[in-house]
Length: 245
Image 1 (cartoon, rainbow, N blue to C red):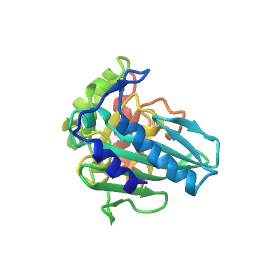
Image 2: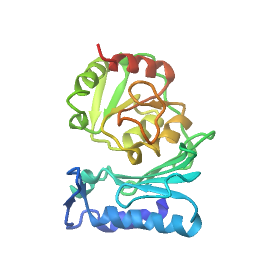
Image 3: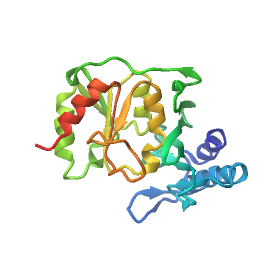
Image 4: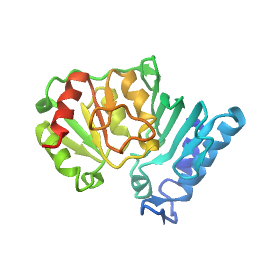
C-alpha cells in the first residue's frame, strides 16, 4: 500500500490543486482522497473481511478483528504549500491494538516500519532510540504550537521550557526521527486515531514509549494527546511535567 500511494501523492505534489475545507476546517484535496482510495482498494481485494478507518472516506466494519487505520497524507498543510514533510500513515490493529505501523515519506523516499515484537526498521535497517536521562538534555518535537487547545497549552509550555530545545514542523516524521535516535520527545495534541495508530509500533519497536499525556495506552478512544519518548525514564519525567498543578 505504501508503494502504491507514493506515486499518487507525488503526482499532485507541487501542482495547482483545489483545496477544500472539511467540517473541522482542516484542508483536504483530491490527492488525499485518491491516495486513500488506492489503499482501500488494495485492502478490499486482499482482505475483504478486514475493517477500515480512514481520514477521508470514513469507517467500514470497524469492529472487525483486524482493522486498518489510514491517513493518506498526514500533513496536508505541508503538502499543499510545497513542503516535502508530509507522510502516509498505515496501521493494522488486531482486536484494537496496533500491531503494524508504517510512516512513509513519499517526497523524501524514507520509510519507517514497526511491527509488534519486532525491531523497527528505517530504510530496511534496524534502528533504536538514543539514551537521554533528563528533560534538560532532551530535544522536543511538535508539529505546531497552534495544535494545542487553550486548556492544554500551558501544560505543553511547562514541558517545552524544561527541555533543551523545541523544534516545530516535522509532521509525522518527528516520531520517525525520534525512533531513529535524532530527537528525544514528541508531544502533541488534538490528534485523531489515524494520526497516531501507525506511530505506536514504530516508536515501541525502537525502544521508545508512547501514550497519552496521562501515561495511558493509546487506543481508538484516546483523548487526542500524544507523548512519545525515547525511554521509560524520560517518559515518566515528561508525564510529570505535563500534569496539572
